[in-house]
Length: 480
Image 1: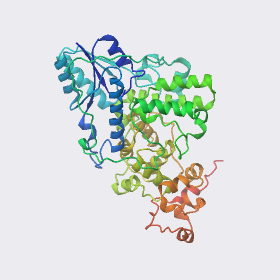
Image 2: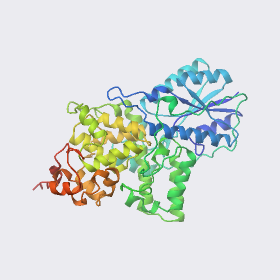
Image 3: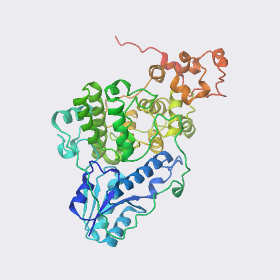
Image 4: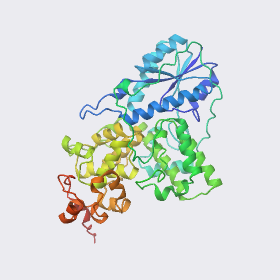
């Protein structure tokens, strides 16, 4: 009698403790991924789908890759559609399963799903065992209790670095045996769930392909083949090119890549190539990822509420849909923001620097309800991760657990610093390609003659700015 292994956000065979334990504990294992159609629902206020086409394509590619990797070891991946608890119950009864194993999740909806699964399996006398695989550091190794995670990232990081260690990877199973007579089911398609076959724009910084195979190839290419880890700290905030950052985030989000695999590869790189501030900084970013997970575990659904973990006042946020859609469609009249939003809409990708700037404009300059912005990026981003996405929006909205964070951005100085020649803006806003770089990031203040010479008419060929850009040129008063 088999153990059912329920794949969730752990779509890999390397360093997968839950799956490896299932193979060790039973001669037969039934791997399954269950697609819940509710994950494709529309946003109740704004109408876009909770998961956009770029995210869904990446997921389906990851499932196809996982199936092939399992078949290479004698197994297969069952794919089913429906209510998760009901599907697992049906499989448990059909194959007389002795247990269900799965990775542990921590968001409010996932925890509720686990409770539903547990209740259903208990009625069938089938135990469910969960394995923590979400983070670099295991919660049992943290120097803090679960309900006493520091609210400040700095304190969390220092505690982890001083008192915690990263566990070794779990070996992946060499052989997987299915019970007899299993119908794996067809791979899902975009049209099956009402999506058009939309692909990333050819201008995309990186061609995202879902799955463990692509993840491991990217890791090898970035670290070893192109030797880019040594430069990470100094290039990570750039906005053009494939290798200015690791771009591991999408594969980490779906569990196609283990954070511990990344960590131990960094340690190997430090031994064989170089140990410097860049190798440290990549681990630093993995710890940020952990911080958002453990903060989510601590505060639960509050990270999704307008008032946030600190329960701040929310009356100042407006629900102006016209402003929101101008922002979402890259029509704010602020070139650096518009370029980033158009890149997102056409590719499902946006740089770290871009995410902070677009959020700052929507929240700090336009005053639009921050949860709308977070939900829009949830839909579009290929690398959407609930803890990191909503945690970062918490910070910009000033509702996060850490009250010391201030994420207001002067978008003029940001554009001038990270796109000094206007190459990024011109890539995504070709209508502005002839604007001289020194005028590009303050386009609404440019001399009309300069605009006319470049073939630009504000309000016609490019939008009038929704904000007064002159505020970004004023010198701050020095306190005496």
